[in-house]
Figure 1: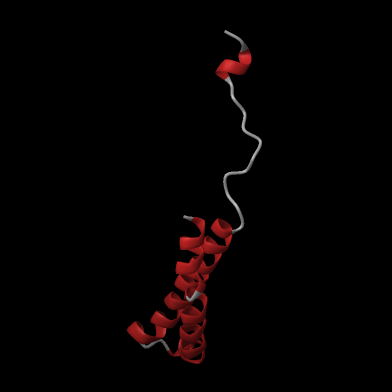
Figure 2: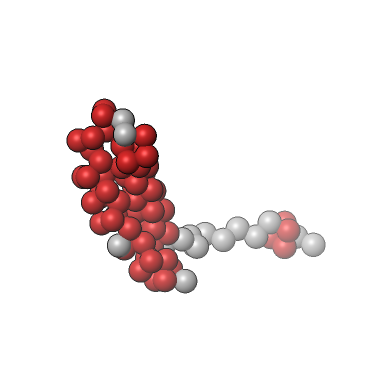
Length: 73
């Protein structure tokens, strides 16, 4: 039994660019939704100016998420 039989190293990356983009857009969408929810749920006046732009950003960032997930599958 040689060392090559025990330690097989694959040099090809199993992830293409769909997975990092999926994670980025999903995180951006959830983060913006959380900022928007701070004003909506708690009525915190500090976040009033950010609530609507964050909700729009969340919606726009979520649009490519299902397509990136399906493209990766």
